[in-house]
Image (cartoon, helix red, strand yellow):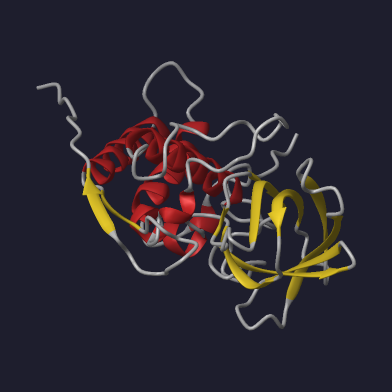
Length: 267
């Protein structure tokens, strides 16, 4: 049975004085160069008409190529978050959902970082991606499964290591729980998500190679998995991330913080 890539850690760079979204879940992202995102970015526009909010998500920053659409009734938003179900537009193959936690004014092409890495980034480490086995590299979605997993794992690790810089709490509540407003960790504070790209690339390759290791003894895939695991750990130990502590009021970085990690090596 084919695996489905679920991107449930997108970062919406919204102004929360105007609108607050949470619990994003996107399915059908094609991480190939000719895919349905702008190298892992999408752009969100919403328009409120008499408490019915129409949401359109675009592939391009100019807002000329829509890939998803949906609506939400925000008449009761003061009492409960509002679910918006997204359906594909223009045969994009993308669908999903998210919640409005609050809404006071419209969005215009807000940036949505869906994946920390895409195939073009991974190809810098592994050029012939389409030569990988078909259950690793999808002919329709590329390395999406591993990009989704690498994004989720990387952001969870960041939330554990930089709790204070992200506003508090070591991880977001699971999107299936509906009894809390998702405010922290505030991944919008990662003003330069490209700082995490290298780690995500190595993690995607580590997972991809590990998925093909199905024997007790060492194989080519297990050796490649271990190589990329080591590279991933090295990249994380070099993290010196830049943060915007007030992402709703300004757009420039305010602080940065490194992390000390000890990687034991068996001699």
